[in-house]
Length: 131
Length: 131
Image (cartoon, rainbow over all chains, first blue to last red; front, side):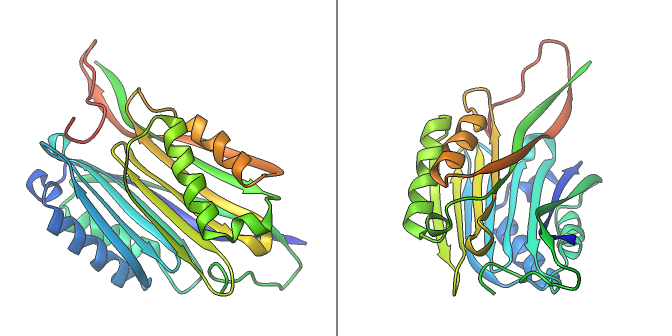
């Protein structure tokens, strides 16, 4: 008996970003889609919302879970969530892509294993819900 | 000089849930919206996707960040993210609401502070992007 995680979740913190880029919804959308592509994930739905007077939220639902970003241009800060399941997607490539897209001066990240389940030896869990 | 977090993020793990409920997209949507209401958050956009042969993803973008759920009915498991900013929203109420909605037999949760920034004494950071 071992354990295996269904997914992994990167919680990224980007500081000292380009404030103007953080506040451009179209840039946020393109950066997220680029990050999806880079990671090897499959996009299902995306949505971007612009706050007044500043701040953008972007979400992409992917076949392998979701990516999300919330920006605070006034602090040069963005919170990024990259939640993926399966072995074919690499959320770390998305993390690097987004750090570059917003010209983050510094960043930190933690990886959390989600859905840790017992497995019999040698058994592999499915890559995504229902897959 | 102190520090303050822009947001808090609950990463919830629900086990031994009602598998049939985990696989009903309309139940997932209603449960998420109820959780938003219960927490005091303001919904902006919601989206639910059903996987074949089973599994549901639901996302609600809120004015205070986002709620997300990914379900694996075959394991009776759901991963829940409740990311909120501001003092007026209580993500723990949403966590309890969703645990109840899916009849989770057991659960675990961690709270992560997001966007930790230096503050001058007495200074309060805005409650949400742009607020």
